[in-house]
Every structure is written in C-alpha cells, then in structure tokens.
Length: 310
View 1: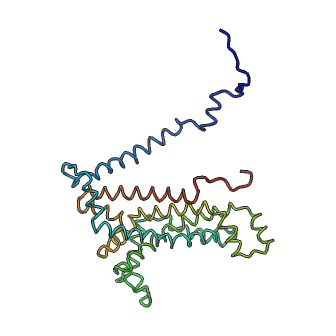
View 2: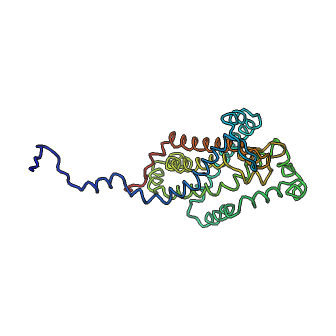
View 3: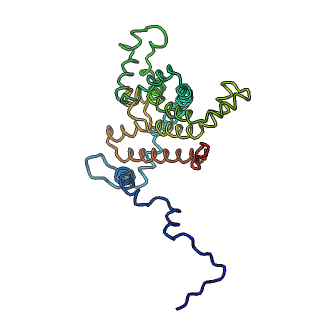
C-alpha cells in the first residue's frame, strides 16, 4: 500500500510523546502520593462532616437523617448569627492590626545592619512557643488578681481585659497578632531582600526619599507577598480556635464565641454533631471562597517572577 503525502502538510519535527510531555509538564504519577495523602486526611473527613451535617447525632447513639432542616435551623439560630458577626469583627480587626505591623517590621528587618539582625531574632521568638503556652501565659498576665495589674496597678494595665465583654475579643485579637506577626514579618523580610538594589539606586537619583522609596518601589514590588500574607492572615483568623479557647473559653458570657469555638462547643459540649458539622462546612466554604476571591481580584493566579532574566 502506498502512502500519499498531501502537499503542504507540516512535517513533524519532534516525537509526539515529547511534544505531549512538553505540554503537560511532569508526569501526573509524581503527584499521586501527595494527592492520595490529601484525599485520605482532608477530603475523606470533609466528606464525612458534610454527610453528618444532614443528621442528628449526639456522638453516641445512632445518627438519624434530618435532611436540609438541620441546616435551616442552624443558620437561622440567633446564637450562630451572633457568632458569625463576632467572627467577621475578629477577622477584620485582626487583619487591620497584623498587616501594617508585619509589613513595617519586615521592611525594618530586611536591613543589613547588625542590630536589625539581633532584633529579628527577638521578634522571631513567639513562633517558637505553642499557642496553648502563649494563651496560658497571657491569661495569667491579664488576670486582674495576680497579673500585670499587680505589678503596675496604675493605668490601663489594671483593666480586666479578659473579663470585660467589650474588651475580651480585642484582647484575643492582640494575642493572636502577637503570635503571628513575626511569621508574616519574615515573609516581608524575604520579599524586600529580593528587590533589586538598582531600583532603589534609580529612585535615589530621581530624588526620592525614604517614604517615596517605600511608596513607589517597596510596596509595588511586594504585591505578591502582600497577597500571600493577606490570604494566610484572613484564613488563619477565620479558623482560629486554640488561642481563644485557652484565653477565654468563649466568655465572658459569649463575648468571644466565634464560629470555630461555637463549632467545638456545639459538638463536644452540647453533643449536637449535626449543627456543629453545619458550622464546620460553612467555615470551609467561606475560607475557600475568600482565598479564591483574593487570588482572582489581585491576579495572583497569574504570578510571574519579577527578577530580571528569571
């Protein structure tokens, strides 16, 4: 049988397998262990929680199917709505506190002077302690009976920060920021050190001072770092549980009962696994939505290297 070549047909210059590999990158099978691990320890439990959110179960007896009714009851419950509002306040205020402090600390720590290196080590110390230890320490320090108010009885230190319903949530936000600002400052420090020195030299030649260099060179070059740090801050605050639980346990009253804590108390104190699962699913959906929204708005999904020649 004779093969007839059509005139003008393109002659392949590379093997088909090589072209296909170049288009698809590394083999899919290289990702299988990580995907299996993720499916086993993340997707499978999440699926179980999603199914449990349609059931009534006290944790001991036989689960009973309740359908969408348990979702309606939970999402219209005033206690859940109050916890949702406190969570929004917690996330917004926490971000407004952590973001500027971490950015300024990161820029300061990026300097090459020796004393800045010493300060960087001190700023990094909170990352070495567990959240439970930090919560217990601050609970003792802020205790009006034997905390800082005993050592410094005058001024705001004598205030009962964790016992006042109007202040307890903001005290928890401060402690959370104290824990995580060093981590985000470390991200900004690494980002600033990646900025080419030639950009600052050009800014100096144009007569830009420190403030203008920060405004027109540092901030634009850190935009991808800011997106990453902001996503971690918002999702971390949204799912924060351990520090608030150790500090206040949700009190005084329900002043610090944010959604993650409400989920725990509903499930393991009131033994209502169905409503607790509903809150858990809501937290997962909101967290994913916020992350995707930030990536879509900021265009970080199209991130490219900012280094010349990279």
